[in-house]
Length: 195
Image 1 (cartoon, one colour):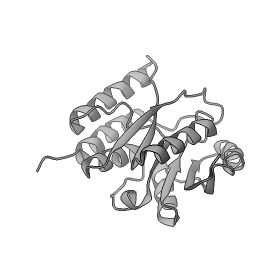
Image 2 (cartoon, rainbow, N blue to C red; image 1 turned 135 degrees about the horizontal axis):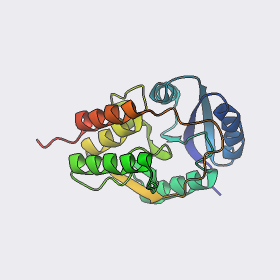
Image 3 (tube, rainbow, N blue to C red; image 1 turned 30 degrees about the horizontal axis):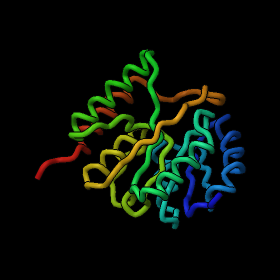
Image 4 (cartoon, one colour; image 1 turned 180 degrees about the horizontal axis):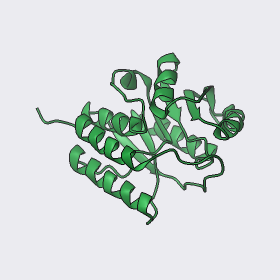
């Protein structure tokens, strides 16, 4: 299997950092560089890693056990075959209050983008470093919303590849209800605009 010229960014807090170390080890056959970024806000951590990388591609994944190296490898292979500027691991939201909110935000993103956006917020993704460095990205959980909409607004192709999300094994979610409203505002602010 090929090793990809990618920096894998792993933001983590608490117990997640132990799993991040295991992911780093497991990813050694897949990517050239892995950055573990502890104890920062989600978007702040990813921006820090993005600024430091010299690789042409960046990959991100959650460190709570929900994403697998196998799915990362699938995204990287897909990106290699199709040369897409961004490939996102598409989750299927559950019919829970949080899953319903995710479905509604995906619908809002689709309306604002003028095209189907099946999952703007997945933490498992691969994207072009140079394009991402041109975007103004937030420090919070709305980072992925801004990144996805920023690529679409700039006219870059975004592709989705279905993944199976595993049960959370480490840590807990830090996302709160207010983050949903912040994300909706970010989707609005970063939406593609007709000229």
